[in-house]
Length: 407
Image (cartoon, rainbow, N blue to C red; front, top):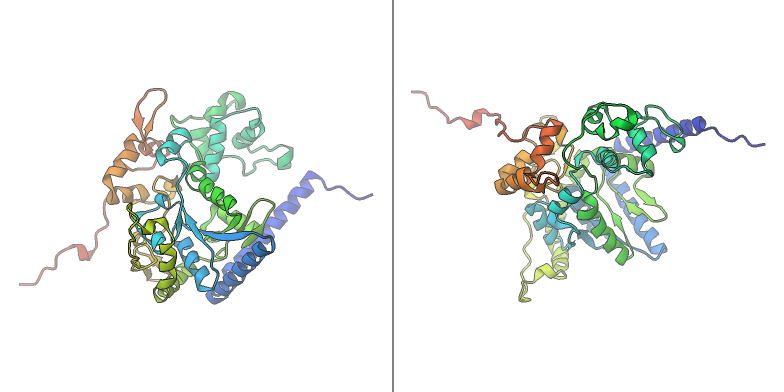
């Protein structure tokens, strides 16, 4: 009679597979740049071939620098697929590059203000925000999960694990676990604002998913495992190309490190300027190439496909590439990871770029349903201990002082 594995044995096997997958990803990340680049090309062609065999299409989902680089890279290796973006969520300099690349621009299903008021604030991380949202919206169906979030004790589906990753870190339990005080006999706090990880769903994911469904298309994504978080876990577990029953995607840059993507971005910028005509044709196919009266707006190449918000790509004192401006970009109202940033953080930089937008989102974007009081990100940042209202001091250098000539 065949032995049936116990829950503990299944859990040990699961952990072993996770460890092996992580080791494979680390090994790929250590490969030379040219090997990774060639591997990206092979994975991209493999994905297109798989889509062709299934009678499906492929497209590239474009946002910031990583996916902009991927968009040009696909053209560079001879893969001609459409590019889509909910471009309005991005910085103006990124939007300008999107249009120069002929990206199809989609509209979000909710405004940022609607999302913050109706769903909640995206804060700490996507994973943790999702857990807090479950605590804030209790039901009989999520009772077991809520217990695991508070205690770390999992049921049958979690192999009866103790101290599992389902438990919120103590720092966040203290601030957000109060919804289960009565059920769990604890004494945690509750915030006076909602938390959610649904922002991306309404602003970006669903519009892109619906476009993909209408066009029977699956995406190329500019994700890298080195970014950490849920992206790292997904790419480590499933690799560059994933073919599920309902979800299929290609992430050719999965093993790239930051140095790799910035080096490729510079190469793709050069290639773009050598092949501007390719992108001019794509631009003229878009509605935004015409004004309200239908008159053609001439194509203007961008100075660089590296949007101005990133600054320039330079080498640091260790020879590693970095951007002189933003290191990462995204929706201006995303708070994921803000607690880990040093001043000047993303909201400080928003104040520098657009003081009126900063004031609105810090103080006025939401209405308290109980008091009618206007509030914004300021309330959230105060609650999690992130400074924001003061203007951070600027580190001065010798170049900030006028040169004094000796008498």
